[in-house]
Amino acid sequence: MPLIEFPQEELEEITAALQTYFDEEAGYEMGRFEAEHLLEFISEKIGKRFYNRGVLDSQALLEKRMESITEALVELEKA
Image (cartoon, rainbow, N blue to C red; front, side):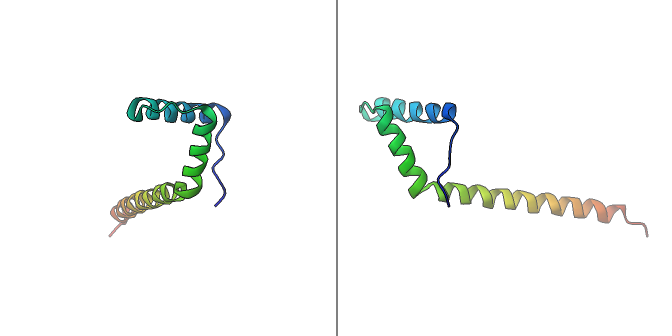
C-alpha cells in the first residue's frame, strides 16, 4: 500500500499537532522536519492498520444497512 499523501494544509495541521503533543506531554520541542518524518514513519509502519480498521468498520456498517434495506423490501411484498 502506498503512503498516504496529505494536501499541504493537512500536512501542516498534522505536524503542528505532533509538535504540540510532544511539547506538552513529553517536554520535547520537536521541529517541523522531525514531525514530518515521524508522520512518515507512522504512515509507513502502522498506517495500514488504521486504514484496514476503517475499511472493516465501513464494511460492517454497509452490511447492517443492507440488512435493513432487505427487511424493508420484504415488508413491501404483497401476499
